[in-house]
Image (cartoon, rainbow, N blue to C red; front, side):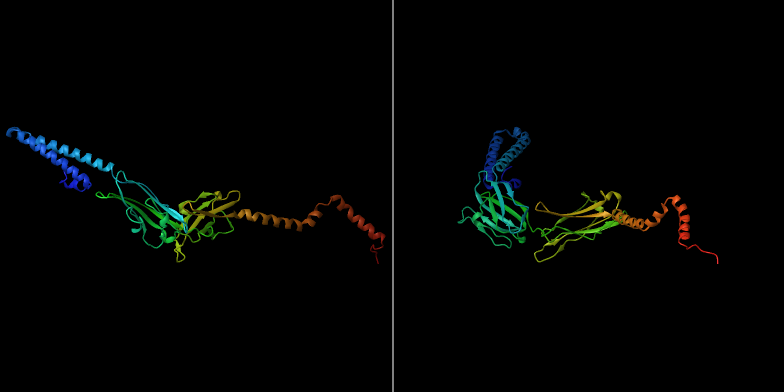
Length: 345
């Protein structure tokens, strides 16, 4: 369509709009000349066909000009921002683009909507940073394709956006953004509390797993004998902020009724895993035994004591019966020889 068409007017760059307008004006002049050459009768009958043909031609020209504009526009090829980075480390944020025949006007970086860096080739020096809490840009190692953040802190976390603009008259602009999170890992692994040293079949296990302070908060999970537990057995708790830095603690409960299959070779292993992305992974495991496994030694000990206390009685009961028959006459004979036999008065 022609440049006076509002639909086309706001879509094409300035230099393409001018070319488009000139093409359509030439097309109109040609059509008017052809229309003037026709007789009045033929001119009236050909009016409908001419209007339809002109609309088709205008549409084709519009599509061609738009395609030319797209093929020569500025494009963003890559934005590389680390999703997670350890506190006090340096972070490199990359931004690559293709000018496709255009000239570069500027490259700008934003954090949470605030401009933090600008690169304009015509400026001296071309790179310039803007102060913002948690943002410390190393200008020596920053350019139109990357910026370097020194010793990131928790305040460095946020949404970073790279914006690239072409020169006049089009001033085409492209941008992309990613979120970066600064990580503080826990000082030690998760702790398991609330467990008993032994359980019987039918007992209810109620234990909690608590992570040490971190940022972001740890993701906790439970395993029984190496297998993930059912969601219905988990007890969720709100995270707790523990200091001015905003470090957080997580807690996850586990509650279930003990079944025979929970014991493998006489014991049951409860394991809690704490994880932060791919940067941190620690676990804690406790092993508890079944009640029957604990009582067996005590029962065996009591039986041993009872056997010792009845040793004498058992020994007498095992004497030969012939020896018992012979003993009384022998005793009487000994008494008669010693003169201890009782006499009549």
